[in-house]
Image (cartoon, rainbow, N blue to C red; front, side):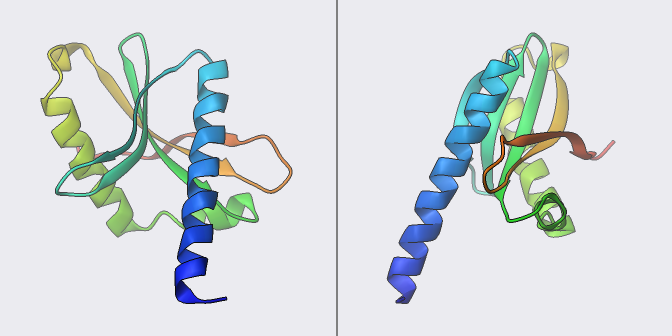
Length: 123
């Protein structure tokens, strides 16, 4: 497999994983606000909202739940947190919002697993 075909395959797997993660969250009552939200500081896979609770969601498609959780490094947390700060600063109701950093693990032949508070942002 060439580098280009491997990248295309990974891109498609990522899109499929994000679609499944969004579906799982919508079935839990969340509204998807943004997908692949890009800022100069980084990208957020999904932003979901239910009432005043905003989820900043990292989606990981991995063979096991452990490998999905280990795939979020400290540097990834800081990147996601910076992008979330930018998104939040542009919201008119910023003062009312509660923010949570979650992960959805997309595993083979299983329904996506939603992990709440996978990491905590700066205080």
